[in-house]
Length: 140
Image (cartoon, rainbow, N blue to C red; front, side):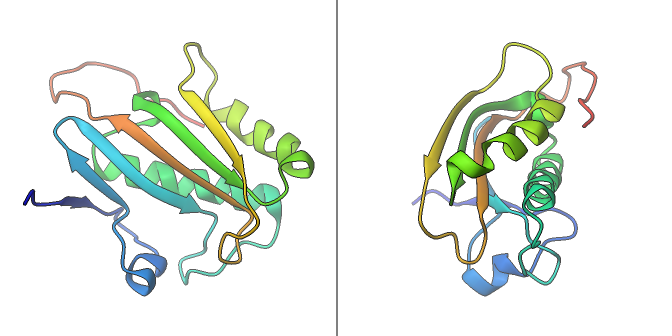
């Protein structure tokens, strides 16, 4: 059996313990990040939708940073939306602030009926850079 190399952000939120999952798992030079939601530190959802999306990206950023990654290292994105047609504009506003340069990561958006009280969730796969790679981190 392979040992899981779990990654957690410095200020991990309550949902990891409450639901029994890791923020991310490292496998070789890949990082598989669990779905990140717009949760506050206590695990409760941010009620304002655009702020919930921003907070989900903030939680994603913290998990990526814990593994030595940035948004530039993301290869694959999957997002889940409870009302895609209504939410699309707010999601694109946040997304476009973060992913400003081509080539963009590939992206799959899925409409769902339930996200445990949340309206947006994002999960990614990222490549963990070699420690010797020189690059400028992306800011959002």
